[in-house]
Image (tube, rainbow, N blue to C red; front, side, top):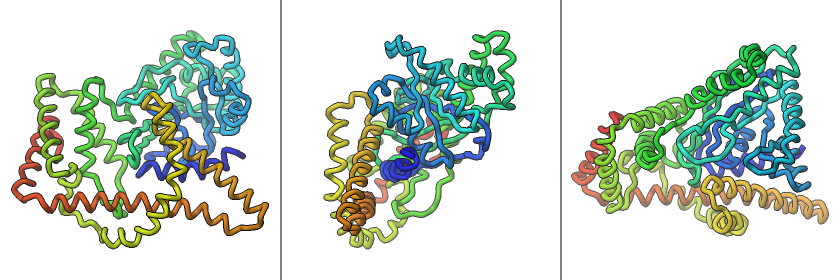
Length: 430
């Protein structure tokens, strides 16, 4: 009940935080079959929230057990389809036996042809890599067949969640689902040699997951990789009011090609490339420009000034109506959140919680007083808040255009040449 109630509100909140969320090849998830989604985990809990809201099926999750210690949290998390897993590194050795109950719940969930979501890395780290996979997923799949050997098949679907910048408001999310992997083939091996059987599952799953992700092997190349990925994204940039759709597979293939090129850069090329990137950024900043504006200088702004006029009043209302509600989340992140992986999840999660409580209060007041017009406050908050976001994005776009118009054609060509020289290092088209 709670899952179904929270899901639409969460979807609204997440779709406001991110500019675009695209899921590709969801047809790879078998229907009416037991399925485990094996997903990378770059943020604290945005991945499960996004997939729960955008997939056409309820999801069940394994979550670190210490979150369930308080009775109210235990009730709420279980109502949201979450099951506790206790880990040795969390230090609660006395609760490890509880995992057997959790695993039994997983088996029952899968037996009912439901979809279980597991993060086999076993931890959250924001990086362009897949961390070493833990053995839990292999043990669960084999434990399922130990208990229900009569079940024909259990599928594991590798999932790659790729953010343009998970910590940045109005960034994009690209999610790709790989080919489903049948697990019963490994059961015979597992029965003969349990440890080797689990190891073979993990060894098979790791490259399957990496194939759906943007991977930069060396952490020291992350900064350069991020800058080159941003340059590539400028090619696919669309104005705020553009209704043309982006091909997710094309975008993901392009980003994987960039990452591969970064991985293959020679050590000798790293220093001059970094120097040229820095020089290019400095030259752009002198004119107050960003890369996507320079590259897409001929794109029409789509009547932006008219839209600014039309959106001005609702945007003004949206700012003042929503500011007190969102500020609570922002202050909490500023004061209490220490790890970058938790910034966006806490902002999104707390904001959804605040609006959920407000929605319940408004509903109760309307019922008790009979003043049903008060319910209109809820869509008003959403529509004016969305207007404010659109207003600021269009205004920023128009300011960039104004700055662009002040730069001479000769200077623009010089900047474009700098850009082309940078891309030559990785043999990617401008």
